[in-house]
Length: 428
Image 1 (tube, rainbow, N blue to C red):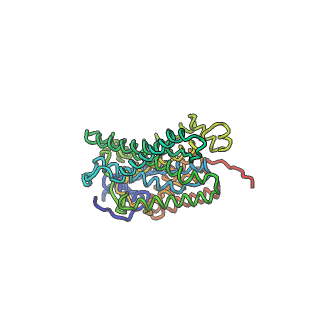
Image 2: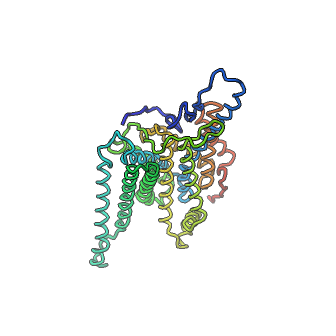
Image 3: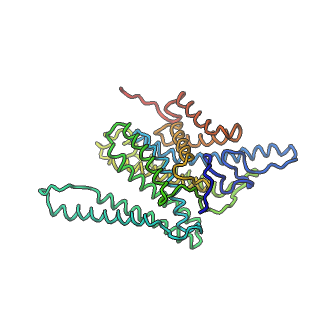
């Protein structure tokens, strides 16, 4: 695949799929519609309206992505009271898995050697064999040895079986997308790739919680914070290996046709913007319904209030915490997929500074809206997107990051708990 330039800017490291003269603006800059020289002065208000609407569309689109990433930060903090700094790397993983799945499913003609990397098969087969051996040990050998044998007991069999089944299911989704692409149902196949990316990142989030965070459940918060930073560095460095994703920036294949669905006041609204915004809104509404309208959400809110009290009431605290990590990772993967649909040339290397800045802005969105408050994270993401894009369009593009972090300082000075956050008193 041809290498792209390594110099990117955030939130859009490169121009959108339909940017430039088509009316779709380059992120952080002025809209791409050319200005006709010598036009009468009566057209100036029309151009002002077009610029405003185009900036509003892009701000809401990118703000919804910030909100999706911020939800992972705020859910984990709401339950465990620590910041999962590895969450932004899960977002990067979702973007790269989306690219790898699309290429393997046939959306790019430049790579046709093997639909799936060999190491994926090796890992899945190894985990499946290990799950079978552990289940044989736990279900067959231990009952025959009896209690007097005093052999070690383990629960690794069901967990490994879950991981193996999950991995095979995600791989099956990729092959399903390949079949849909061959039948001419590329749009449906793109949705399947989104599910595959969400499933893969959900599996990674589950493994990280079980292996890295669960053993530190009763440890001081500083230990967990250091572990989160270490996990973040681990994901970045593994992603840069040649057999994983490598260090060469790539371009996401087009999963949606470049179609204009509406043109209000002369501003072209592209299909990718409509699908991206609609997907983000549906995911956020679905999460809101899950947390506030279901028994699982009631259990999540109970664990957030007090894990010890929730355990006394019969709530499986460990399962709720694992489900929270899985849900946050899946939302981050969806944000990575939608981000590449809007900015297909923005797939930089996993340790690129552009990804770090995107994760920091999503974290700022969670803090501004109220860390630990789900609706606050949604509001904070939209506010960050609006502030960044309108500040870049009407004040200065070079100061777009300054606007975001200045808002963070103001909110921390005026309302430290965030816009929708609640003040809590802590006994010392």
